Length: 156
Image 1 (cartoon, rainbow, N blue to C red):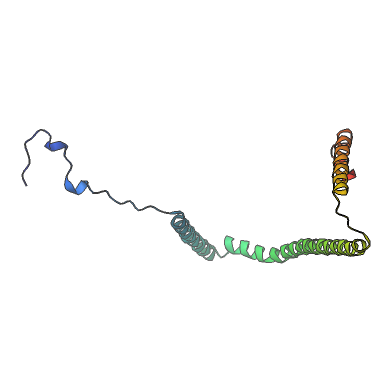
Image 2: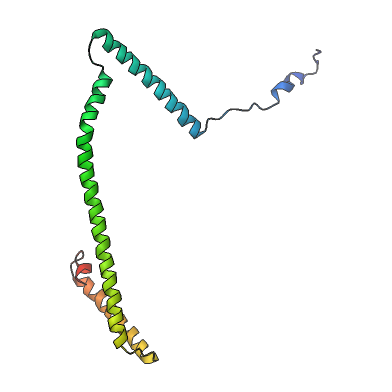
């Protein structure tokens, strides 16, 4: 290999350095997998060390005592959770039945009152209905200003 004696020869990069090195990037899934593997391996090692220590000292392992306490408390916890879940489901079912009942009553009311009413489609009746509804809306807005703030939607 011959070196050039020109003054700028030392500034040039060798050919092997000109290629960009590809960096391996850890994506989120890879990072989560490696972290989970690390936790499982370290946790397993700690569990085995605790079992060995408990065996050598002839006592119960700390991890096994925690597991036995959990197995005793899970049924009581499950009973409480199932009670509240049952109450939630029954309230949802009751609300659904009430909504269905109201929808049925509205449909029955429309059938009963719709057959006895005569429908007129004149311009003047439609215009009068629009003016009346606008007057009711304005009266409701005026009434809302003088009433108690939180209770006004309830009483309207």
